[in-house]
Length: 381
Image (cartoon, rainbow, N blue to C red; front, side, top):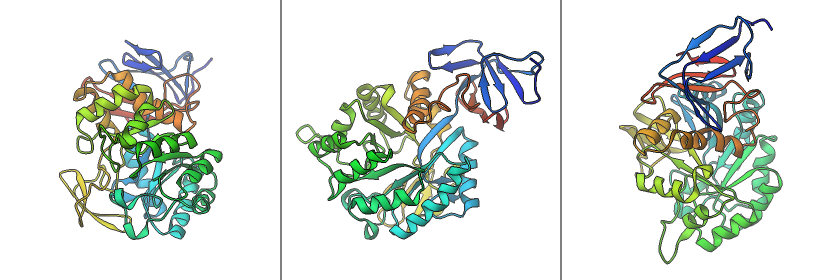
């Protein structure tokens, strides 16, 4: 078997596989895929002193590099995608924010084309079907109840590319909308909600399987009124999103989520907005003005946290070096678990022969040094 020009063997690194970490590992890249065997004469690259982990999978992301997925042009969206790829996110779902229904349907049409051509992994509608009590950085004037017919309108507009819808399931129509989403193979996510514990249990029984940025934009955990947090953490069917940027969550809250849900039910997300990978300044999140200072995004009016400026390489490094989580658990939360949620684990989310050659190279201190997507170096080590 002769080597091709795009064959590569990566040697010497600590490689994180589904079965654990392999010292002095060996990864074979053949074209766009990972392979089990290396052809004779294939060039090799020594990555001794580094880690190689699967490419990151972000299921909740509103933009980056100064570009918005909610309001930008096709070129803007691609700029945001490239920014996050340079930080290790090789699979990305574009999230919208609350807007007029016709506008969201129009955005769905634009974003679906980028899904169809392979630049995005799907669309996540965050709003407008959320609670005014927990609206966060969403325009209250544009919020509406989750009428199943309107939820269906957005799903149809996405032409099969809708992957997730965040709902306040306690609102009128919420449970019926959860059932509708489940029937159409779209993730129903509980978020921006004022639900009780009992209402959240009802939503899970109806088919909700994700907690949108757990702890944020929902009632706090109480000892007499445990609210949605307890219900979402305790149910084995639910994956909980966590924003590990040091602003959205206290380290003890992150530890609680990992302890109660386990590493198999956590998905690290960015919830990034335009400023991710770009810098401080003035931005728009949908119709709302946002100011970013020292990397923290807040609404100009009211001061609510408005998404994040996080990239997943930072979330990874923080999880290992500050939160002291095992590297293998972080890989599950940042790659494998979200890939499984998307139904894409046969292609991405782990380093196994036959899957896409999506990987991230980190140094001994877990700083990003290289990114490969489908066999091509986005960032060459």
